[in-house]
Length: 231
Image 1 (cartoon, rainbow, N blue to C red):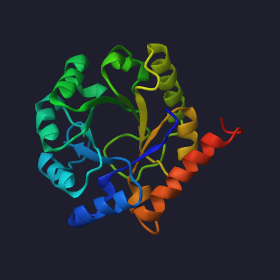
Image 2 (cartoon, rainbow, N blue to C red):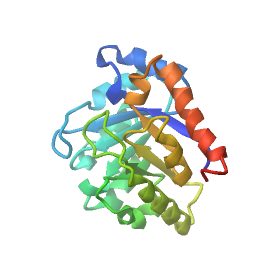
Image 3 (cartoon, helix red, strand yellow):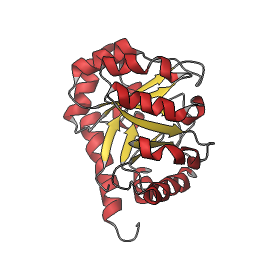
């Protein structure tokens, strides 16, 4: 997959005007809306639940990409899918029975994905590749927006790409990156194999807002893919 998808994270939106900010992202050309769910236990922050996800669903027809940074995600998967999640990604680190959880997501009617933290080897998701549609490489430590991109993440993205190709599912499983993604870091991640870019601060806190920031981010990524010197 060489087409680039942009998934603005509402973590950086104005929660007092969430419907407006979701629509601004859609008008700016967003492909998915990324919903960061944090429980204050797995990560040191507490964010939104199914009720707010349902409100986001009412604000847009774009796919909702729900990222569960929570312990025991199997407890809440049905609620998030019922609230409108099209995609649900869980963390390898919180799922001792990972195959069971990704199967649960699929059976609930959503596309399953698995995320790995910066300190987690990407090879830990190898055995569930036949059952998922997305691998999320965290390019910062999860829990807060606005963090600096961890440069060693590029190596993990390349490893994920090779692993997916070896599985025979190249073209079926997307590699997503989340954390510190902006026009300066997007080129390196897409060259290594990422095709879904999650961006929060770079979209909602950029001068001009989502309508300017999303096209700039996409352009930076697409120029990198087209450049023979970067590939």
